[in-house]
Image (cartoon, rainbow, N blue to C red):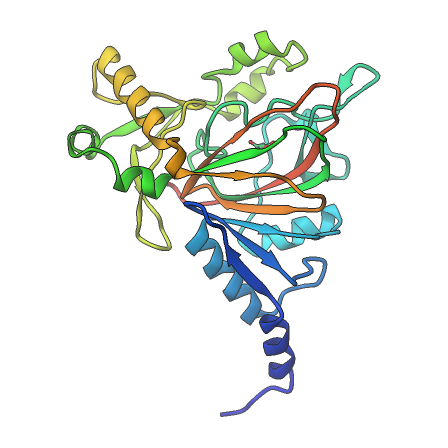
Length: 297
Ligand code: SIN
């Protein structure tokens, strides 16, 4: 077998990287890796596998540019552009600015992103495989993000509940909570007809199979799931409420307490997340990329 002279260098780069699982139902911290540098294939495979194993990876100390975040995100698939184009980062449409900062009275980003539990872009035919969020500016108080392990949520469902949702599909609608969010946050823009046409309601299985690991996961959220198809309205509401409450039980949840320059990469096929919020007068800004995934099955 021929050996490349680059192999020892790649092996050394890979061994300097440490992946430390959290003492939590999901998540691991990645140390000793600089995402400003392109990853060789060996290291990429290791990170990819860790992402499948732990569902949320927290890369510490990442002083990367938006272009470098985009380049790393693209290693996992094509990127999705958020329907609220108002909040794209200038010159980088692939980045959604998540921020509570206002400039001249106007929001620079989507300040209430993640206000309800959700999986990113579940309202699309092809929801997001994963998302990356890079901390730019963090508040002194609050601003944590919670992640719920939806494999565990499914595995621990009572048998009767598993039976009730077996083979069922649910509707996901971007507009489900939009008016409610606008009432809370009047700065939220009205959607144009073209924007509304981009996000018609879609149907996905209530329990999806992870396309890479084959594990089952619950795939409904309080933000976007409106009803279970083929079930009377009241029963559907009651089922969804039970599923939501079960999904986010403390034993399924990891709390991300942000550190400066953290870059967090989560698997939307395995987890839901929630932004816990912070005081309005404390600036919080993060840059988000989302990677397109498969149609759930
Ligand atoms: C999001 O839902 O993508 C934002 C999460 C956060 O700001 O913590």
